[in-house]
Image (cartoon, rainbow, N blue to C red; front, side, top):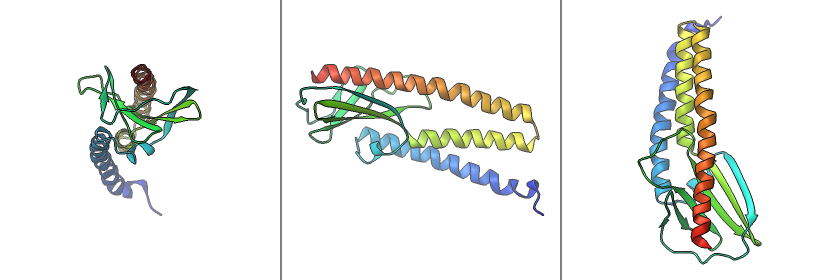
Length: 175
């Protein structure tokens, strides 16, 4: 019979490698978002959707346009990708990348979580949980998960607010 002690030497390096991968994928994803690569904007869990009338199809600029809090670029006649502008801001684990699609007089806005940040956060929680299991400390594990929840949900709310603010600035620019 395999005991739990025999599993620790395997789980700890796996958690480290997942965190390591998450960190470098996060940097890769930031680079791709800054370059407005359409493939990276299709990845990630959709956590925000908005549909509203947009009767006139906007004339789209060819270059990257910067508003007060966002950057956007049209990648086709009917699709616009956007992210957040500025390196100096409060970072959260729930940064969202956005896409606007214009079809049939409607604007369809979607916001997706960044894969790299999500993987890195989950790996951190898993590593701290493993540490709690090694110490056989249930209060420590509960504190880790409580803190993770206290970080994640307000961060997700803040990410959605930033996405809405960026969309409104883009909409003002296009109208």
